[in-house]
Amino acid sequence: MICSVTKLAQKLISIPSISPKDLGCQDIIIKRLYAIGFKVKVINVNDTKNFWAFRGLGKTLTFAGHTDVVSPGQDKYWQSDPFEPVIRNGFLFGRGSSDMKGALAAMIVASERFVKKFPNHKGRLSFLITSDEESSAVNGTIKVVEYLISKNDVIDYCLVGEPSSTSKVGDVIKNGRRGSITADLTIHGVQGHIAYPDLADNPIHKGLPIILEILSIKFDNGNDFFSPTSINIANIHAGNGTNNIIPGSLFVQFNVRFSTEVSEIEIKSRIVSILDKYNINYSITWFLSGKPFLTKKGLLIDTVMQSIFYFNKKEPILSTSGGTSDGRFISLMGSEVVELGLINSTIHKVNECVKISDLQLLSYMYEDIMKKLLT
Image (tube, rainbow, N blue to C red; front, side, top):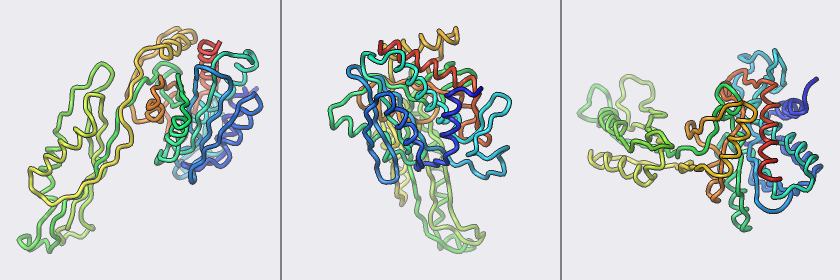
């Protein structure tokens, strides 16, 4: 017999909600939340679907997640249609099964069980759901956070359902994330015939030592919570593929993942100082996708760790590794934020899947956390 968490996960996976499209996933979730007494505020922005739902009054425990998924790529590389969920050998296959429609299903079913057992629970149980996490993230969670701040509303504790686990559900939880800033650098030269270099100005030749010096920057040594800040080239391009033309410009895209030991202002300053030292003609634009955030040990982390230990008989590892998450926006409200979700070994990959028993386990962990914080 297929459990209710799996059934809901299958229903959500069957909807091809490639970011930022939702295509009806949130309607399914909202209908189930209405049925157990939640009030729902829809906060859609352009093509992004968002909602804020809540039940009860007082200290607020929020479950945050997203209904959008990344593209599955070419279907021919999948063992089955990525949007036709299939169960094989105890695993549920489909795009979004781990990231993060499986966790969404676990949240909803856990809430239904919890409300049935504790209809008059203390505190406020809430959901913050978006369809713009896997793409630009400009019209999603941040817009709901801005709405809540405008209403002087608060989130005390937030569980983000991102796939934080590595080999067993709950073995790793995230209590923070590094910041991320991207630099789009163009070094300008003068295009010309490659046989007459004296009549041109090769931006690649000028740019190589600059790139190497930028990559050698040591921003910090990290700290007890974060690894050292890292800088990597994401994209580099010059020329049009022709072997007899010196290109007129060199484009390099850097991404810096940074700890709380350095600010985005310091990062910009150190990179620009190198560029200016070489006295070159360049242009640079910056995109800050998120600042680093950290939740130190407190009631939420203690509660989550207790629940995981109850089920796994082993404490989870606290980590800030990986990319960014929408927790970076929620942390702006001063909320305690923890990410607890499914195993991440197949996320964004062909044949993404989740173990059926893990869906059930995660839903029981979520329910136990609700019980500990709201009863």
